[in-house]
Amino acid sequence: MAECSIPDASALIGWRKSSYSGSSEGSCLEVLDGHPAGVPVRDSKDPHGPAVVFPDAAWSSFIASVNEGELACHG
Image (cartoon, rainbow, N blue to C red; front, side):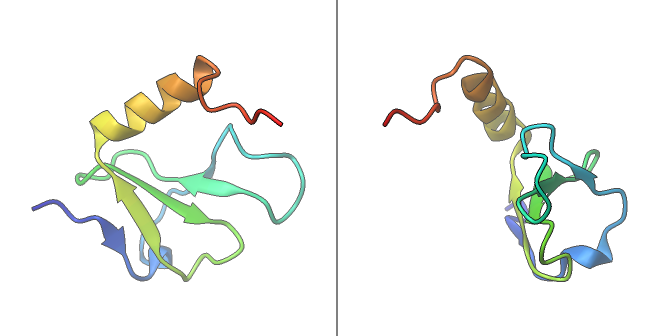
């Protein structure tokens, strides 16, 4: 079974701010490319906290949905 979380995300190097994060400080998601288990995602405010690892196919599907506007807020 693939790893689905990383308890201390600071153990990994190469994090980058997600292009979908806002420009304001403190509200950023960071992603890590090239991890063997998928795409780790963490909160930039808590670099020593956990990261959730999404399988590559799930992450690709999520990004496609965002790009297509399927996840836009309506309200």
